[in-house]
Length: 290
Image 1 (cartoon, rainbow, N blue to C red):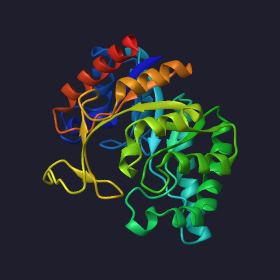
Image 2: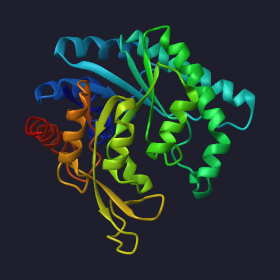
Image 3: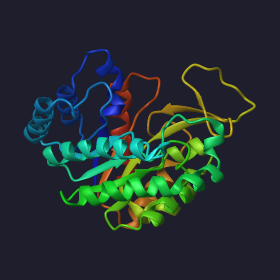
Image 4: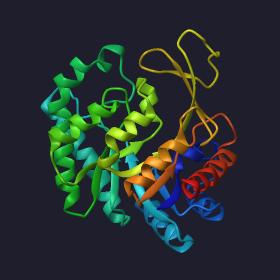
């Protein structure tokens, strides 16, 4: 088991110009992390091979493994031409992952921001063949470079645990797994413990995230909060500070025999460096106590 951090956790510093992605690598090493997930927000690599090479070499010199590359994708396109364009776009990122010597990649299957009518099971089932077809084409392509591809419970349409399983089973490919985010089930009002129980056996990488929860009829105000698919309120929290039952989930993960990457993803209102450091420290303590 190795504890690390997603670059998304330090997005505030990246957007403000206070850190570069190379600085993030060193920061993770200096603060007890063992690996880094690349989420290309606040910087890009697919159009910057020099920076991609610099990230690979900096990680190597800092002793930080590059555990995963996460990107948006949307295979639910209106025409075959647009579908093929999206597949080719995602393949460019697969090529980047191979260039960097990485072996794990997460892509979405639908747009992240979708209207209410696209959150339904009927819409999901109608467009499942496109989601699966795109995923199968990408995992076939990535397998040639030894890269595992994954679907995360992310994006409101394919986010509940049974829908993630539905995509995995429809694709039916040994190279296609799930990046299991323990907190994201709450975005579609699923108990995180149940979501983890359902999908842990399919997981090739795990995100550790925490949220504060407030019910739909108890508005906490808009600052920092967003709405779930059923109108409840969530706000990002430091790992161990929020309402996700992380200690119990860590016990489930450990008891399952999972022994790969655990990636802290912080998206709270606190200073992102403090939030990320506390989160990694808490996660290590929870694992040792489990």
